[in-house]
Image (tube, rainbow, N blue to C red; front, top):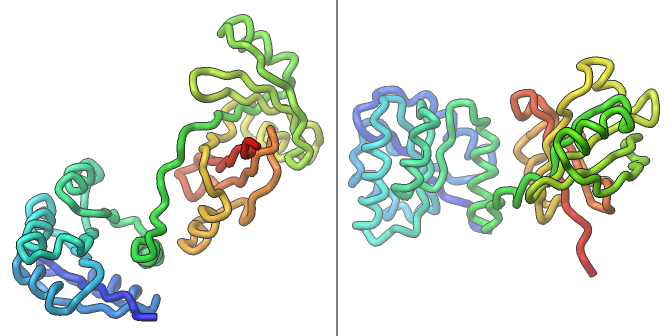
Length: 270
């Protein structure tokens, strides 16, 4: 198989390239061919080098704060060279509030300074294989740990006026759950059924409250595989049985600033 060719460039007057060199080496470690154009390249020079080297991806690095000007210029220069099909990704010291603007201007993906180098390499591989994941479809439910369903139900039924949809035991998680539809999502109350239930341990440590946010996805197995490739911390490496015959898996809270996320793939309708 032909290796992926990536051009790494430092547009503008930025005189620091340590980060770019680290990224270049990480991509080489993943089997890619990397062309590094060096410091202080103009947008036109970068675009022409990308065409001459017949690269698959252009990666831009900027620490100077001029990314809002420089990155779109590279996209425009590629278009002038009839090479708009070459995707441009970028990284460096880039404030999160600038990301929507850069994506609007044609930059395919921005990696902030906290992005692992492996994640960049995996993203490029997935992009070349047309495997870029879509966003979760919606929030399937918000899981709330409670000591007792019977004690908690009056607040949700009487005070909030929600209608109880169903109560179900999930043996694999050692919980009894109650579902309350609200809009396009649900609130899910989780009562531990065993002393060694994860929900019981959560309540003992933190008290009752929000335990997790569940995101509905289409292909949970494929998504977990992608996360494992990126080194994302997971509680479950493979899907397991959840409520309503769904397939579920949990992402470790340390991967998401202390928030527990559940991936949920609903049972397919016959």
